Image 1 (cartoon, each protein chain N blue to C red):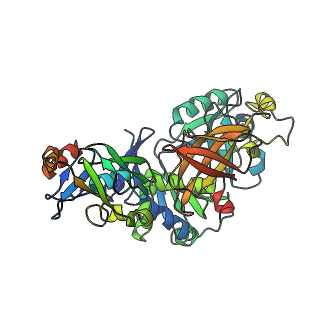
Image 2 (image 1 turned 90 degrees about the horizontal axis):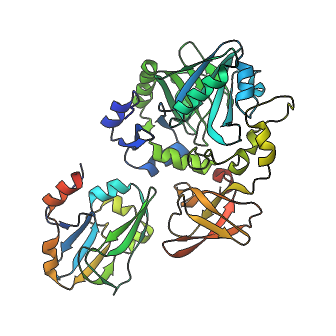
Image 3 (image 1 turned 180 degrees about the horizontal axis):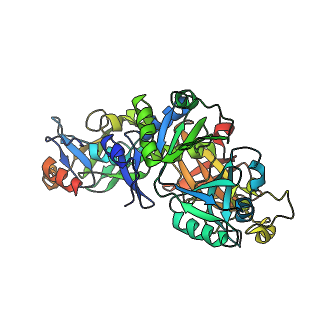
Length: 128
Length: 347
């Protein structure tokens, strides 16, 4: 059974968002998503400073099986990317919620967080 | 959906089950890359019981097979062994690929793909009606593949048989053939489902890792083996599918299905070759490739766990240069054309 931490918010397309103490939001893909993709072999991350929009395609994750877009849960500016994923993308498989994060956003409007699914709602959407 | 007799095992052992040509089969048991690497380095076990087993009966089996397939069954009559061949229609189009096993005098078995089983059964019966041959489709057969450099060592805990490549051993219940789809040392073990379950459980009790279909696909690609339905279909012929070596015309008097059509197809403008790229990303089937003076399309593409790069097959116009280009997510990717057997070519 895939793990769904209760402190995170989700897009139905399997991205998670976590509000950090400094006001930025960390983004990654869910345990369920990495299971669906299987062994991940490449990621393409956005440039730092890039403006992204809520539900806009922002990164790409590619497994042996298939390539998938990763959507941004929020509108804002990319402030940091997880460069460790470039050489070791398998971290996403082993630690989707911690070491396997993709990028951080400085959100334009933090109230967009309210539009995201909570853990319970995500869990039932990903089961269907 | 169809299920093999090992479906319960797959379910209980972390098998991620998917629909594969109407069969519920394990795509992986956790990590396809780990499974792939185990087969290259040690040993793994595959349930491939979804594939179709046909046993032949009747007095004219050799004559039937001489006519049925372009490869010549006379090559394997001197001993118990196996022969690979495409199955062609009258136009030289590829209906499937299969392995013919010579079990003894006038005693043959055919194993073909699963998605084509109904087509093949009907085709075999139609052709057999012109010979004294009957076709028995073994719907409850078990096929277990034990593959990897330590396969024979592990096999010896059950069967102490030392087989040359493509040769086979048979007792009343079990056939063991030095065949496989991985490019590694290994055997395929064919039996009834009841016997198969005992064999499977024996190897599982020896901690041999079950391997899913996803790793089977990357293993076969690295070894340069075509996949029917991807790298060749009825629209293709042996010459544009890297299978001209399977057309045996050494006995000019032998007639076989598609023989006449092949005379013209020899000048096919396309061929099937390997490609690889060191650039990031994975070019997949259906992607176009181009080069000076020609073009083509990728038929299989994956990330190679052994060589840690994107490899695959593409069908391109003949007289291709060493390199070409393709496009992945609006980026131009440079690729190298090569032989399909990456295990030999890239090592």
